[in-house]
Length: 145
Ligand SMILES: [Zn+2]
Ligand SMILES: [Zn+2]
Image 1: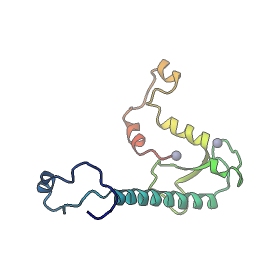
Image 2 (image 1 turned 45 degrees about the vertical axis):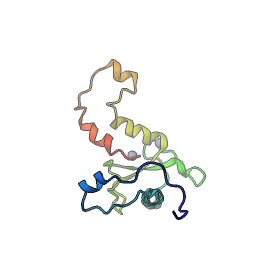
Image 3 (image 1 turned 180 degrees about the vertical axis):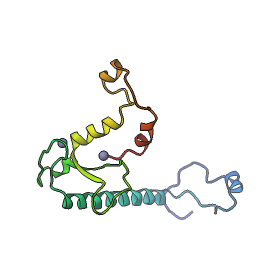
Image 4 (image 1 turned 135 degrees about the horizontal axis):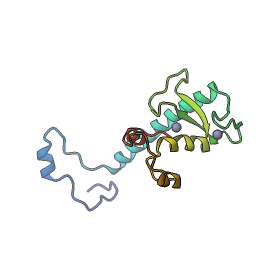
């Protein structure tokens, strides 16, 4: 009983679990560690986004690729990086997968991809979905933002 903060009253890893996973050391639940892992993952993601965003902003003029709205330092946070192939992890350094879009156009861009969701009345009225609905599922699952 060293004062390492109060532990939650839930049982530690039960014998059960340990027996079914013999390769695993009986690690005690370490909330602080989990927090750190989450924080690190978040930081890594932020850094990644930061770096490709920063790069994209250096590569391209600060203009929305759809509505041609221009941006400056006061509102550049509304300018976002869209991945043309919708794959966040595909970040070629020449910027060929990036497109700068304002928040609104970016949203629109994704709505077009996600039109399996009954968002618009138009979709309800005209059941004219000519494409396979499941084709969009993949992009839905790994949508970027
Ligand atoms: Zn725009
Ligand atoms: Zn996007």
